[in-house]
Image 1 (cartoon, one colour):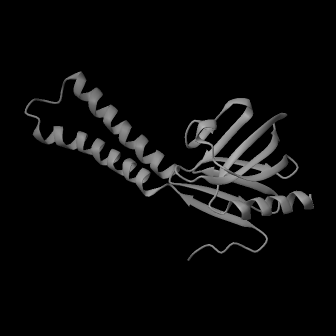
Image 2 (cartoon, rainbow, N blue to C red):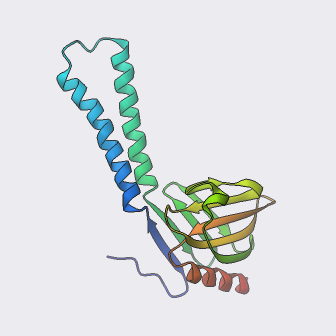
Image 3 (cartoon, rainbow, N blue to C red):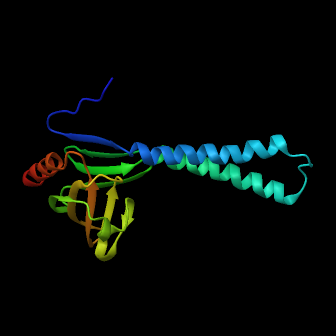
Length: 171
């Protein structure tokens, strides 16, 4: 059953582009192949330290890639009565409306943030962006006594901007 957003709230799940997901899937398959094939065709014994280092590193790489694929498969953005929140898997940010100064729909600047994903740029700028999605909002706020600007990717940037602005007007 698909999640139905109440009229006074905002909820959006933005999946990682299929091409990027494919690269992650192929990486996991390649690493697993690097574990399985040598163990099948190896003629020697498995007692050398290099073998144990190799297999340990390959298994660690597989687990790390699988976790990254699970955690970063989609960016979730939501606004309710108390918070603007967004995040990838276990990595999430949540701000109350009294922390937020302004919000503005703006295109993503790859140059400004230096890439996609969770990015930390100069002068307190942060980005939580999805590769190849060039729409979103910039939120100016105070976090821990410091002025910050967060860019949040969104396919429905204008709607997100309006929902946050309406919450700012009510608080």
